[in-house]
Amino acid sequence: MAVASWAPARVGPIGPAMLPLGLSSSYGIGARGVERAFERGLRWFYWGTLRRGSFGEGLTRVANAHRSEAIVVVQSYTRLASLMRWSLERALRTLRLDHADVLLLGLWNQPPPPRIRDAALRLRERGLVRHLMISCHHRPSFEALAKDDAWSALMVRYNAAHPGAEQDAFPVIGDGVGVVAYTATCWGRLVDPKRTPPGEATPRASDCYRFALTHPRVDLVLCGPRDERDLDEALTALDRGPMSPDELAWMKRVGLRAR
Picture (cartoon, rainbow, N blue to C red):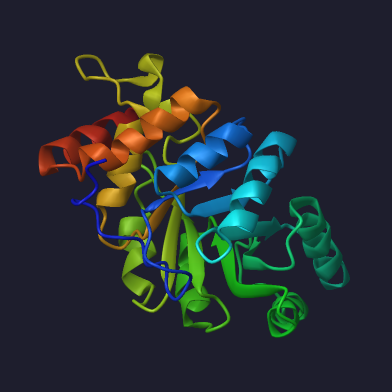
């Protein structure tokens, strides 16, 4: 696989150097797909919003056989600090693991209150997680989040239809904080021919991942394949390498229409 054109994802201090593509549990890929992704070099596995059993089976096998290499990310949406440990431990029991590499606090459009932050820090102190990450849609909040050393990485919505992070988020996130981009296909809108401007080519999913990965401030992009065919298309992004200026401009024209 020709991946020399991509720098390894660093994602702040989280984990070893790895390919800059992560795999999400929410869209349908099963156990064999998880194992194939690991075989192809993916190391970041996101046990996220929808937790499909077959994905979990594959992640359990991969993580137990290669625990020092697999980065297991567990998400929690809880707004009750008292439930955070229960939520995490339930996920760990399902995956048959004693810790997660990353606990992701989902969808905080303002910095979380001290009770939530402190509950997450206690889980890190107890060794149930090694790093903390937070996701946010509200771009003006990233400056404050990036200044808080509790967070090893930030999850940012970034795609050709929503490129505002280039001005509002990336410049205020310091180099010591990882950036994980999500919704690269804009929930499929960018690859929908009905939303493509007249006279323009419709992007492939791999184009969407390449668009996000080409930005130098993005360390890793999540992909959500439904099946192994989708996984192959996502992996093609790594083979095809960064976008040219002309390709980036094309993607933004398509993104403007999709938005």
